[in-house]
Image (cartoon, rainbow over all chains, first blue to last red; front, side, top):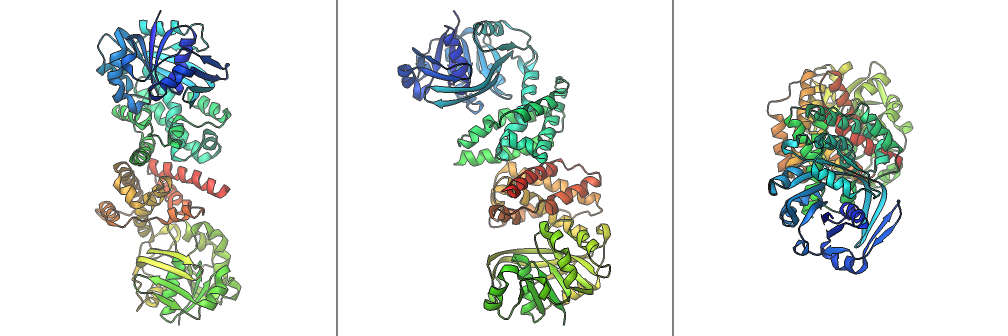
Length: 312
Length: 312
């Protein structure tokens, strides 16, 4: 049986970890302050796929009590990554696997550098609409897919790796559709095409996705940012799917008004994931010689806003 | 004696008009709702150059009671221009002068097209820190200079015109230093180099000038916008003063925290002067083949914000 540790048991880690526990895997959650509460009351998942209640949850205040595991799922906010590399190093088995379920770029190289060379680092992309709604409750409002793709230095394509197959197998029989992707960087640019404009503008303009789509000026701005992402991806060797931009615009127009993760963080007064979602893709694109003036402008706006949040 | 009408008797028109009245000129103010109050109580100017109180003010509810004047000073918000061209046409003498004291571009051609060909249109640039602080009170916090420059179709240089000399002469002996400028478009681009970044970013980032200068990310954004303005001005035949950008940055850094006029409008829930201050310069620059992606981005952001204000 594969053993799992979940570092960061919030909306994302709590959801994906609970699915593994429900399927009978040995899952250990780092819950910090709420660990005792979860041990006593279990973990509630309110889901559009059906609610469930996990009892007998292995919830930990600190990683010291978590045994070394085959797979460590890291689902903290990217800003916290530098604070948890030691934790991950302490709970992953030699030759184990670390899956980083986060947005944007920059996390995988950080962990790859910090961990022993025999640990496999995998990038995870959550297509999930969930929020932590209580000390022991996660609410899952839509989607649920998980894409995983192996990391190689410089985000070179890794193909399908043993670690990816291990994780894919673990989710078999659950409601989580797992996609194994051989090109992490392409997956990140594809998701970034949505994340970069909508996360940025939702904070700068204090707007939900519908408001951004309903006003021609902001829709034009979304498009310009998507075009810059597309140019960066192309320079990075990733021709994105033909028509992807229109597809994303149409899908977003058809969606219920949605608050992006960055907007949710902003409204909660939390520091924003500016570097992973915007700063790292910007620097990577610019490093490839791509002009990205509008993303640079919103990056600077978000950096200003983040400094103000951090200063409070 | 030269007669003046002031259309828009707020922080700018109230101040510059009061200086003429104080100097003994025949000045008629369109005060709309507060006209009776001003007739009864006079007009108070609280000024760092010394407070004064004008009694016996010719304050009007409507332009119908204003006689035709030699000079009409238009100091309404630029968004209101289309609503006052008829008013101005009704109060300006044949062969008279109209001075448009506003920020940005687009106002002069609108009035020039709407007025008889023998009326001279002059652009006015206020270097003034004033606010309307009551129904019959203007507070003047600093500076006070007025630059005037004749308008010719397409903003071609007009040189020093008779109308400009008339206005310059009227302010002689007042505390208002008047500069006669032969190149309106250069004056507008020069002022725009400050107005475009600081007005835009103060609204989008909800910040005063000090906050914008103290954070490297927003200062970098101010610089990028200034560089785009500079490129547009150069394409428009206006090489701006060597070192102007650094001068403006240094001066702004040294200033007390300052809320731009657009920020003041935003905080008061008023529609913003987006088109004259940002949209028209952007279109003029782009029409000259200049790439202005960051100004275009903030223009779209401001258009989004303005639509939300207008929708309230």
